[in-house]
Length: 446
Image (cartoon, rainbow, N blue to C red; front, side, top):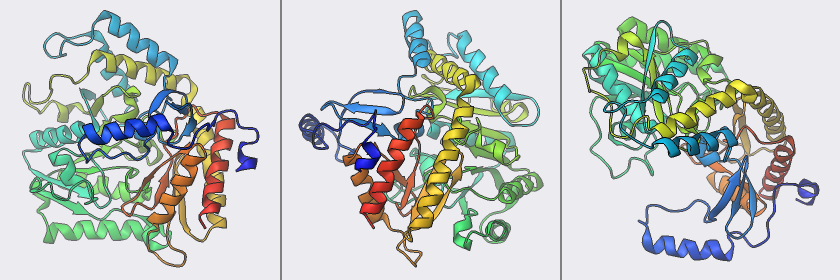
């Protein structure tokens, strides 16, 4: 720890963690909020900037969570902040479909231009990732006249009824909240780790099982859409083989199914490209975005083939808040940041993380895999010599790291993955500092 922080310019821990003021607020929270709203880190934020967060006790941490993938451009990005303030001084809301405004139109134009989708494209804006999933199903059903939905093991798509049904992890997301939405079918996802790193074996198995499901689970001609994350997020940043995604594209084309890529977590520069889809050269029919699209202001988007989007009857999608002007202006500033060189920075961050994570895996028998795309990276921990998820060790690593100034958030169906959702504006010094803390935490928990 001494070596990692000797030259530190960012981490500054001045009290025990959590500090006294945060502990007092945690007690107030427990008394005033529903018990279900438990706290991963009971440290209350006072201010944040770039890749750092400072709590009300004066402790400063490096943030690898980024609001759970919402702050790819960093906390309080100056251009985003200025855009929000300027728009708030003009007007904050009208409901676009009642009294429209230009910034919504211009944002959809930019998203259409950016999306790796064939042919003419159109977009619609919503509030959250879950809303984009719900509406993608509605759009697909309207376009096809069918009702079935295919999703995948390990998926996370949100917490509203349809999105929760499509989400794979039972606890805490699904248990006790049924009955679930009908006609949702879950297929295997191609995870190379399940096949000792053999990507083609993983792809072949998953695609074979999908085809078998047309005999045992559903009639392909009754399926409206297939919704898949090109890189699974909550499952622990599982990167499928390109052949798997190509196989899904072929399956959907064969059966007239709408292929939906959920890029709520993997999009907006998280993998070093604006869309993770670009790594695979596979083009969906609908692409979903949220989280980092507006740097913390609630916004979601569906970008899709015009011929599909326009099959929805008048006023069949929408709502009161979607495409709020504050969110639209924030999103323009986010896109400006990526066009201004932040994607290049993301590539550098990703290369640094990959080198460090691969080295950690080589040194530690408890790290089953170092994986990811660009700066969307993860370490999966298993008990040495087994395939038993080691969630206890991940918890211990996170606890150690937090005490020493690094905030991380785990993932994985077994809760055994460390994932990186660090703001892409992190400096080289902050990256070195935080990797030093992570290495110390891994060493201390062996």
